Image 1 (spheres, rainbow, N blue to C red):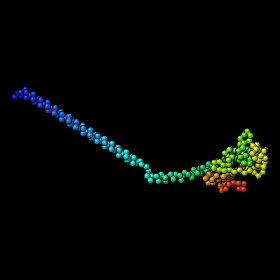
Image 2: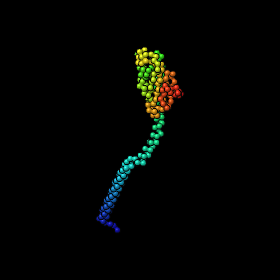
Image 3: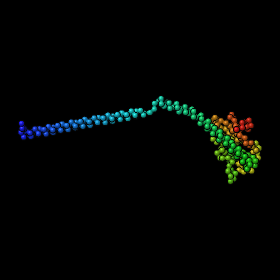
Image 4: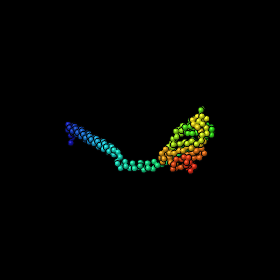
Length: 227
């Protein structure tokens, strides 16, 4: 049975129309799917941003400072360290001051020997100021800082001998008379803090030490020789 030409044309036209309708439907479905996917992505991004904001707030709240317990622990640790370190530092400082005092006593003793040989006609200077004053065109017998009588936690007291050897005018620096002896005694400025031991020497050159009282002429011989 043959189909007339007009009928065949109508069927073809209907087929093309159907194909076009199917294409439109498929396009609409794809567009809808794309919109849904975009909507989900936007929703996920918003959730991520919310998570970041919450995490930032938590970090800020966490870093608001130390608790009272933490501060007490830190203070306790500092106190323990100080209790251990401070006495050691104090002892080291006193040992350093005592070593300096011994050196100062030796310096004065050597300066007195030089003064007696070159300036005092065999006699010793009457004071630390006389030792520090230089002869003409020369330098002093002791440093200027030692002439003040105080150095590195110790004070030094000079006592002249009883008998004059040369009058002031005949000494090389013309400051004071020279004498047949001297005693230089060093003691801590603050006993038990800047030093413990006492030191002294005289024209014999021996350095004496003791821990109880300042050394003078009365107890010089009974004091212990410095080892």
